Length: 599
Ligand code: ASP
Image (cartoon, rainbow, N blue to C red):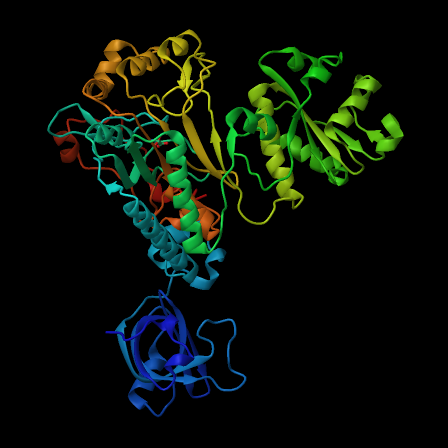
């Protein structure tokens, strides 16, 4: 139907006759001349109808917002003074000759350029309208460019795109499974994959060497900010490559991607051990754009009597750390109270601070409610260690190590943002040398990644000291966001059995759940490893979107519902009977549409 996209017209087409198809973005009547802004996925162009074209003019007069039109006309330069520099096509307009109304539209539920005036729930309910907004269109276009660039890169490196099942058994990635009842096996359930992890490992056992897939993954997690129950990974697995080689290829992939799509050179990514990331930034995904660091002061605080600091300083599981913020002395009491409240989310029971007014005046030049609890010489050593200067505020965390890291780590981000300390640009890095396990709340070991990650020690060393063992895992981090993570996998059956034992998965359970994997490891499994990138998050960063919902065409709300289709929904009794399911009680009357918690 069309000869050109609206948004692609420019002065190069002057005097050409073009046919456009699109939606009416705006209609204006200027004393006998009708202006239509016609929109398609490439942009907007102004079409002018004057009364000469009687029948078509009359039709143009009838059109309303979001009508679908086919327009034929001649491209001409805009007159002096009517050029619109804010519009990509602002130097030209189309003099309309013919207009066909392809479809009418009811009054839109919201003006597209006033989308912020309605809540996100309205936008999600009418998502097909929301997606007409140029901003949303551009994001999805960029998403397509990104997946295309990734496919081209991986294809060029000899990776094969192989699909893995969606109806499968549980793959543990630390979340709850989405279950699908089986009709043909009464009382039994499929699990939707939390990731293709086990299948991609089995593809390595089959000899496919280099695999990738742009894979949907499903995780039924508790409400957490900016997560989606179904999301997309760029999933990768390789055989016969060491971790450095896997990191090098995928780093090149991301570097090429930023170069080709955004014209940005990310440079070489530094590698940082997990222990250093936690020590300096309180996080395993440090945002290196913020020039603030945590400094351990346990040795100094072990000397003070002040219990709040002394206790954690001498506790092997405790930590006392300081965060020096240059220029932070201007932070008010009220703001400090707000920060204190903020870090209480992470378990911190308070936030001690010292303001440095005049460093040369010694104790007299400092201001703080805690100075009276500390000997002068300790304070002097503290100032020296932190390199304190006039105008600083120093915040303190003293608690169990994980509480200090989490709270000061988040405080670092928040204060950095509030004081405008986040540097422009991109700060990528690899975090490496993760511990294999951490202690869960119930005192049992849980894997930091997943149970198929290889340790960098022998099974005997692993079993004798699980808490000390490091894994061969690596995470790619960009601007404080984990873009992807992976590891070298266990390819020897005895090692896999050791890990299951440490995790408290007995032989019977291991065979029941992962028998197929343990079997496969018997039949010549090659050394292998890989990783997965979160595509949604990557696109979010690259488009500058604020939420991953803004880069997913049809996202779900935070309570995992689709406001447009009203899913999940009830099913009728017959369907349940076929599935051998009897509900325990009538489901609550509330339908997901009643849930407006889009954020
Ligand atoms: N399957 C892992 C995940 O989803 C990634 C990997 O280890 O390749 O996080």
